[in-house]
Image (tube, rainbow, N blue to C red; front, top):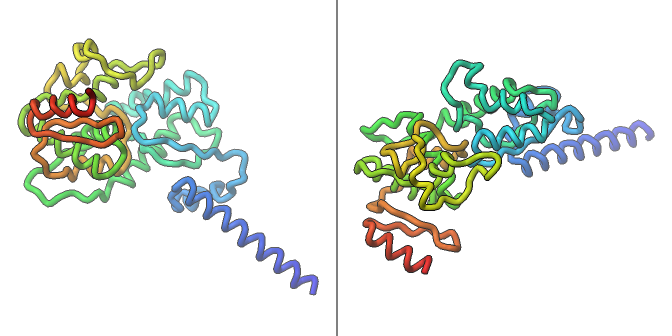
Length: 270
């Protein structure tokens, strides 16, 4: 009888433990493969593990801040994380710090953490559905556009695909992109804020990321976009619009001409 009771208690503990794991997976949107990949991840009570959530649309300096706060990095470690491309002898890796919820050992250093994030980017983007088209989209180009979409959208897939269509229309027509998010990236800094509102004078900032001043796409991504934004870059909505704005409720309104765009400004921002 005692053995039976012990077995029941053991069974209950297993069920409860499984429930806790499933609940955490659901709450943090974790990929179960992450838990199976490294054995200590299975012990969610392990004090050496940190749950780190990286939101979509953060630039790498902001990602470094989140990691430093969770893992106790000092300023030198943060700088190593931001400039890991120098150690890897690659180009700037902005855009490849994939936004995800991670389980990371508290003692992991900048190089190991960046590798984890870059590997997650590769895994999540390798099977993105692309339209059957004669136009072949360069992955670097798609990532730049995706990073702009992420900052310019309201977060919905429909919003992202429409903005993608407008960006592509501008590129194909030879227009300057004239997008505020790229100027925000150019002017952003730790002291004043990474995503400060753009004013008229900011459009004169002499930076290759200033798409008001320079034609074409910026030299690199301006943030680290999520999967929806990347998919939208490859799969834009077909539209005749060249301009757009969001009203005070976050609803997007697009227009085919600048005159229509000015009317929308008067309507939604009187």
